[in-house]
Image (cartoon, rainbow, N blue to C red; front, side, top):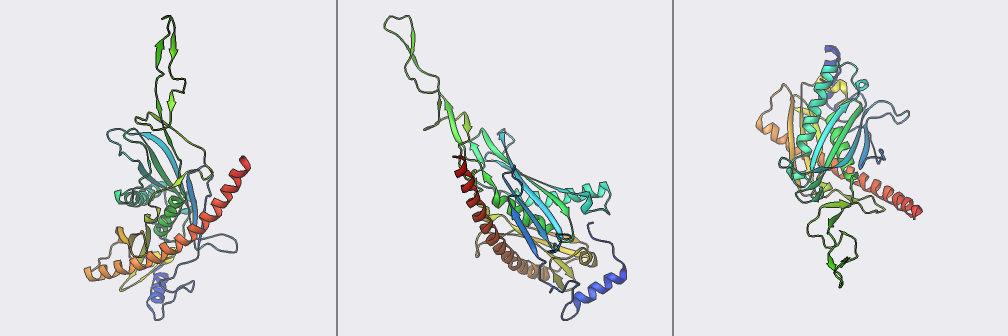
Length: 334
């Protein structure tokens, strides 16, 4: 587990503070408040999309908090019988040993596998699949590799991973492609019958009105490609830390160690009124009654809607800043 090791006295003290009225947390937050979230996109120039996100970082020296770096890399793959036509999504989560100094190498591998499984199973679901990952039907498509690196953890890792993933996927640009068909030039015999003459002097590579594309080329555009289709659908997650009948959000490591169970709920908010629950997972040993579970799922929808709205606003601001910078850079090249 990623939780910090705390004594029984410290655990009892944290639980008493969370259950008192009004609740008391070490940093002064209410039960449903998040720590400060910092986000920046375009941090990896060689990737097709990237983002760095931190939760609870010290604003004075930049230390502490949970920090995740996410990057997207697109590569061309040939479509085979076992490969999905229209592209694939592959997710991988790596954890820096410095973020988990108390874990052995084997435990760290298990943690990376668990985090990767949760993220990959959710984001690779067909309901979220972008429609513009195909290149040549039944021949070539894009393989979208989403890699996330946890460089520091101070609690609430699942929420941070999904926020960073959504930001990187939002920032992703798919290179524009143009299909190419090769046509062998037509020839005919000259009047004397001793020479073959090309009937059509145009290039054998035709990029207009291609009926049977054999390859593709990458045109040069200032914006480096088009955005992923349906990027508004990428989900966000909220972790409900359960303590008796109460729950709280954005737990620190010590707070996570004080509660026996957590409920992870992942929602996709395509619009303020359209939402879909993408994934749900119970972490811990406690059991929940059906009425209590339904209540928590309904409250989680409100939390994730607020998170998705705030994140989209920030990402739109980042889009405007980076697009303006890209136009200026492309203009200097001409």
